[in-house]
Amino acid sequence: MTATTRNSPQEHHFDLVVTGGGLSGLCAAIAAARHGAKTALIQDRPIPGGNCSSEIRVVPHGSNHSNAWAQETGLPHAMILEDRASNHQQFEDHGMINSRFDLNLMEFARNEPNLTVFYSTTVRGVDSEATGEAREPQPTENGLGRIGGGARRILALHASQLGSEKEMIFRAPQFIDATGDGTVGFLAGADFRYGREARSEFNEPLAPMVSDNVTMGSTITLGARDMGRPVEFRPP
Image (cartoon, rainbow, N blue to C red):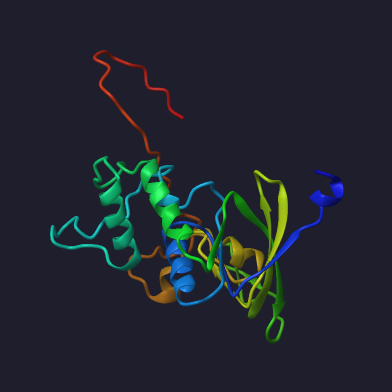
């Protein structure tokens, strides 16, 4: 690959660009494609599924936790049924997802003629423009967010594909941010918050009196087996 090729981004035009190939982004992309929109799905991992992929293993099946007769609906339900028809391993709440489920999700996306998936592709930048009066955004009370910056319209996404080392530009009239971290919105200059708001701001009785930077913790998934003897635990 020459330096000229490396630095010349490929430009793609779609009706809709979805960033984030977790369950919400995947379902949004499939639904849009089935309604006739030429759709792109940008996923920064080599497989779809996000938290419900074999990388994280949080199963998309919580409705029957308290009701044995309850089921998920829509696309998640169809994906679960397809998995049960083709996956020999047991499907239980938390931790039993395997790579066959990843392939099942891949097939759902692959079967949509209006959907193009870009795996191992990460959004690095956003082109946007103000749609009204430009205002200087103000920091949130805890100093970790910004609000009041005014409305903006996304024009294009700049992305890098890891395996091919390709640079890409995605243009569309509409974009969906399903990254889970609000990456596209942040890069576009949208208002954002970090942490918990003060109780007085939205009259939430369980919120703290003063805003802070506390967020939801992460979960470490693990596999364990009985070794029949004491084994030293080495924390990650």
